[in-house]
Image (cartoon, rainbow, N blue to C red; front, side, top):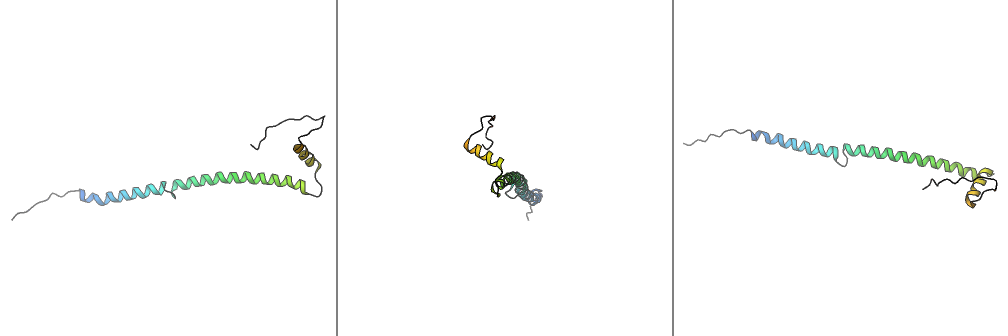
Length: 107
């Protein structure tokens, strides 16, 4: 009768834990760097804060423009506003006035 004795190896016991480590590493990487991961959330929050700042600036500009339009639309036009708009449109000034040219801030 022949008998074979095998030496027990420890490699069989390491297969399942190593597969679990690989799966956890894979899903952990994608949980941080994925499209809906933690890193993407921080980037979206930073972008939202930037866009909120732009929105606040645009709202402030709109309020200023509405105030200036309101001065033109009331029953009587304010003389200073009419004079300013006419001089700007016609590019004129009085002979006794000093004109200071400023760079255009809209560019």
